[in-house]
Image (cartoon, rainbow, N blue to C red; front, side, top):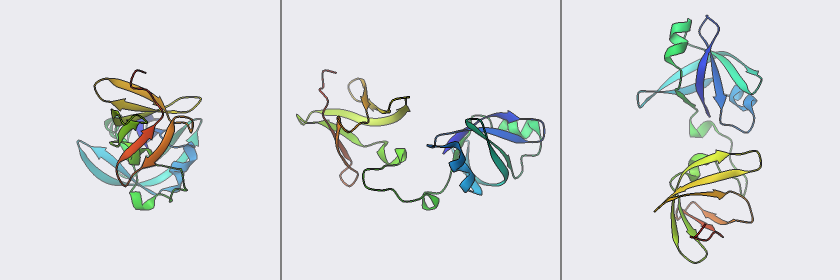
Length: 159
């Protein structure tokens, strides 16, 4: 859902950079999971609001600037069961990470290791014998088959 980028003020508020389509989407969740040293802990959101392109939030147990600084860089998530379902042709990024990418010539290009947001469209980061950046657009993505773990693309191995 995002990551904590910085403290906000001196009373324990944090600034969150959302990885959602709209910053206000984070406001729908009253409980967040925060990654802490490889473990996830549940924190209740006391208050939150959109602040420009970010969200500022007051979390339980985060009562001063030092506590907010300790959360800097931590990932914010919500349980999968709390997320709304997807429509046909829609995918959560987390569902795409790790899928194999194969082109129309049946050449394995690698696995999706990340997704970049650009102004024009999302871009798949595919790691194989080398890293490739493949636009996540209808002209390139032929099929996403989460059941078999394969994304089929119209993309040359030479690109």
